[in-house]
Amino acid sequence: MSNSSPPVAAVRPSKSERHDRIIGALKLSPTVRISELAEAFGVSTETVRRDIDDLSSRGLVARTYGGATAPMGREPGVRERAAAMVKERERIAGAACRMINPGDVVMVDSGATTLHLARCMAGARVDATVITNGIRVAQTLGAAETIRVILCPGAYSAREDGVYGQDTCEFLTRFHANVAFTSSGGLTDGGITDVDSQAAFVKRAMFARAERRVFMVDHAKFGVRLLEVVMPLSILTNIVTDTAPPAPLAQAIAKADIELMVA
Image 1 (cartoon, rainbow, N blue to C red):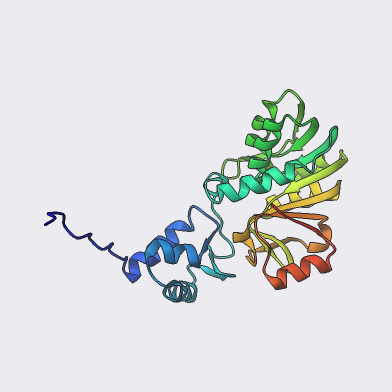
Image 2 (cartoon, one colour; image 1 turned 90 degrees about the vertical axis):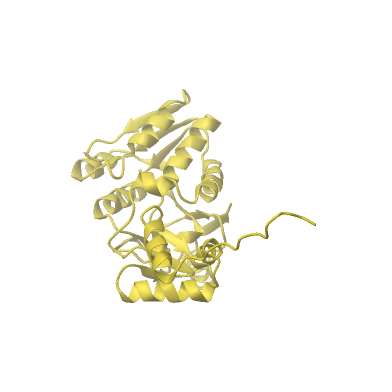
């Protein structure tokens, strides 16, 4: 007869503990998914959906397609965002990197997904001139001898690890680019959304100077409506993502005649 004890059942978190963990997760990532939370908590998706409804009614989170995000005016800093959705962002960055032709002038803004792009570009030793407002983006690209880096001037934001402001946007008007890459906190049928107006100004300035305008977005940002509409879908030429968008968003993308790539 075996002396081994029967396995101890995992203790499921209480309602209040689940709420605390959902809010804690949103301090590290811009969005959380109901299915992933249900698996982590060991409860049904309906239970998590009710948790999110409760938190949403109290103004602590905002409901999204299949999950939740922090309230419209809040978003984690770039270092916290960079720790989330790493595999998805690496796939997106790899696909986006292959869109760069030898000798291209490329604009890249500061962000978690664009930092992955910079790492991919440096690793692939692409032949390009890159104009960026991102400090870590510039440092990463500068390690590759084949990449010429032009860093924008501006007021430094430690939270976003980039430079912003009037000087940044005016500097960008001096250049033409073959392609510009950006990412943001949300993508809806109404366009790209973000919480930071200064970042939004830089994204608009870069896209205004580029022939191809590529938006990189992971599936957790589908349907996320944040404080500010950065630009309508009609401005974009390409979207690179890791998962096919839900039907309403996919229809809006097709209507805007945007080339969609699922990495």
